[in-house]
Amino acid sequence: MKLNNLINKLKFFIKRKYFLPFGLTSYFFLKNYYSLPGITCPIRAITGVPCPTCFLTRSTCLALKGDLEDSFKTHLYGPFLAFFLIIWSIKAIQKKHFFPFLINKNYILITTITLIFYWIFRLKNGFDIT
Image (cartoon, rainbow, N blue to C red; front, side, top):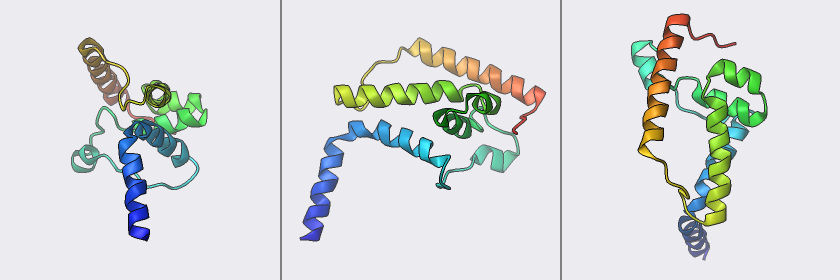
């Protein structure tokens, strides 16, 4: 009987995958208060060179906590990613779709190019993490 109950609960959440953005945002928020596991950067571990998104998770967690000053110091994109995650969570639940809006290819291209320029800037000036 317990197995059927577990399967029914699992089916409930699979059908409602639009709650995943909320779960991801909640994980990042709670990561500040509890020692939740995370993944270290494999590029940095292998080469010793930080990748363009190194410290982005930490920055996003700080922004969700409300510490925008340290969030911007850690990674420039963190507060913007936190804002996107909040909007994504709200829209996904409202519209009951996992990804409730379309993103233009130009937005992805512009974001990627600026992220690479920001990464080069950080490589030249150092990754100061306080």
